[in-house]
Image 1 (cartoon, rainbow, N blue to C red):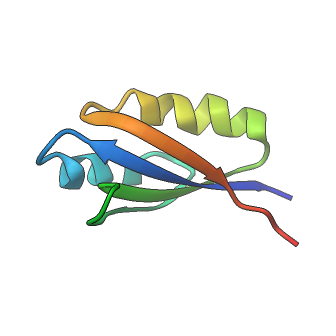
Image 2: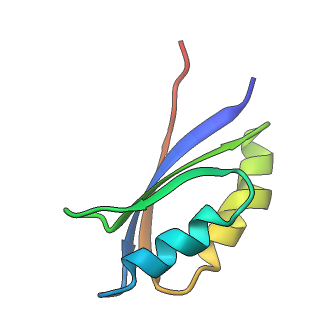
Length: 78
């Protein structure tokens, strides 16, 4: 079983498209799109475990320039 999360991202003004493109290139990111509303980018990621998610994906997300705030929403599978 794998861990899946949606991450809602706020960016610097005018950076949503660039941030989404950089996020989409990260291995494990399955979706990254610029959107309108209170968040600028919505991304979805998947990893084998929460530890792998943090180490291999979230650490890279945090390094993307232009991101000002994130909200991580784990997906519950029933």
